[in-house]
Image 1 (cartoon, rainbow, N blue to C red):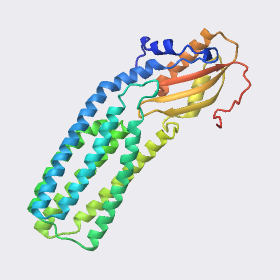
Image 2: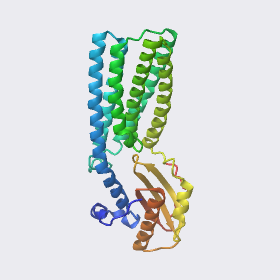
Image 3: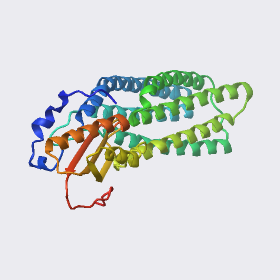
Length: 335
């Protein structure tokens, strides 16, 4: 994890002197949280401007395809334009979500809009599965009844589409690896790029060799790739929104790590969830073996927090220190 700084406790110190302090070692692991937040902040602005560029490029593609489709009378180009327009909508949603995430937390919205990108990812992944199904059905129909593909205009505009879409894909490829929202936008663009490549290849094959089936077969492969990728994304976004524990963290190992602290007797009433792609939150009740002072309990929980940040990249811990409390000692409390 990152280096921890000590100055990030200010909002804790000012705002959290509630009367439940005697019961809680309510010490947030905010230094890691803030550091992680700061780390993604500058990076996020860059991502936002890249997304904006992909929107502009896709508007150019859509408009040129509509013009080309109307001039050449090609239905394929017009339907491709419609597909690209759905891309523009998806990218705008991704961009808005990316901007919302940066809004500060307030008293009404204590988490800010940190989950906006998850909702965008969920929505766009659902749309992508629909798009994949439509492409699949369309391709099967085209295999049954091959249609002649118009030459020059279609190939020329498919070439433009491939170039601009590829630029868009490259712009956000890196960010798509660690951000579900950008990943959904990336899949939209990648599908379009591959579809345009399909149109290009099939256009050339039809013109030169009179082979009609390649386009449909390529479309089926693209549709299958799209649906499997989008399904994975949909599952992930749903898991985050339903507060599932992150799949990469072994809960038993985490409990073992906490209980390796000599003064801790038992961990129970544990909740582990992801706020978004970068922030993991943990809350738990810690049974102490002895009736230690509040300052000692704080030192213990601070040590645990640092270790959990290091080993499991947990960005925010909220522990309730207990001694001789008669409560449910199960690790997972049935709410």
